Image: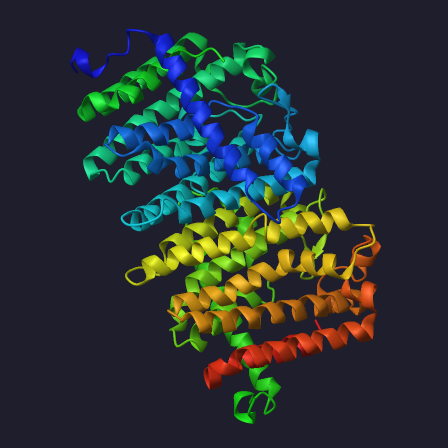
Length: 307
Length: 307
């Protein structure tokens, strides 16, 4: 890998500001999506808006946008899918936080949806975001050649969100509580619960850009490694973090008897694993050249973040 | 309308047997769908199977199949959408039955999903069926001209299932509990909660058959009236029925303070309204001629059913 492919070092603060601008752009799209729904019950829209717009890293949308640009596509063609991916992520958080599941009362520093709106409306707001995501994926961007690409993205995202992906991972996660979990089992939980949708986000961006097979494979390898790094860093932050920085109760995973990378390997070896995963992510997109610079910086950012 | 367009009278028992065959065909498709998912947690698949295969009228799949045939399409082209529609219907039943919502412990004569599998797995089984439905709609039937039709069906079904349709209707239903509800408000609840998806089922079948605009409009008008009749008859059966016939607790709607057609208009006037709706359904598909015979018989069946 030549130096020019990883011009990350110069100024991390620049990239942080860039991410912030991207987040604001995505938030505008999300806000607009939930502003223009006539005939929808206002309580339902309020609950959907609350959970969707309360903040968050917007990692999935950013991945989709940057992957699209890395393969030469226009960012705007990935914006609808970006919004849809964030809606699917948010619906899963709302449902995972429910008393019957992880029973989390805090998320991103604010009361979770069921605490704020009651369980019934929280479940339905999650369902509505879930459906709205697929509606958006089925309708945008309009026109050829997007009709065919939309279909591929939809199938991909549905598979990543379903029984073999996100929902399956959440089931395995719940079933592993309080049990001794092996390293391969932990990897499988995370691949399903968070990895699958992150990978689908990157590949969606690539498909919408009209990327070739090899380019899509590079995005897949990159995002699989990135997803692993994200999860390990999340686990570490959950173990060490304060509620202020993390927005949720620190040490909760341990209290729930959940398997995490730090609980399985220890903190320092977990950090080493995250670093290794980020190195693999860099290698995976090296063939994409300078256009993938932002994806490269994103990998470094994931490793460096402290909240 | 000439007699030949409504050859319903001859033998209702024949039609009942026909429906039974259609149901078995649909059940085979549903069973196959949940048999071949490698890597999915077995507990999750078991919960999905339980709720999906426990029985039911299969009204949405049958509507899609018959609408497809009425417009000259091959039934097999509507089978995947049929399965998807039943999955969306089932996911909504699982979530509606939860303690935080309608708190129903019986459904189709058996314990509801959360009673049988616990709340967490019930919520996730609903989510997984929801996602799987959109996956199927995005992938089948394969080949041209279905790529374009799949996209239209997906958008249509997502809209019908979302904030302006099924989920919105459920929110309005919950919010109306114990309140005095006007006739237009009741109609709006039911159009969202049950009507929207029934209409989407009929139109999906028509789109998959490659139907023309006027034909699709006939299916829309037919299914809107049919949906109203279904809802009124459901309300009447809930009021009068026994648990054996109905498969759920009779009189529960009244106990929950829910607005129903019988509570708003009385039993006999409700029956008259259902009859009127079925007459409108017949008129709507009269222009489709003899090919729509089964849809005609279905409307009569809805009115005559006693469980």
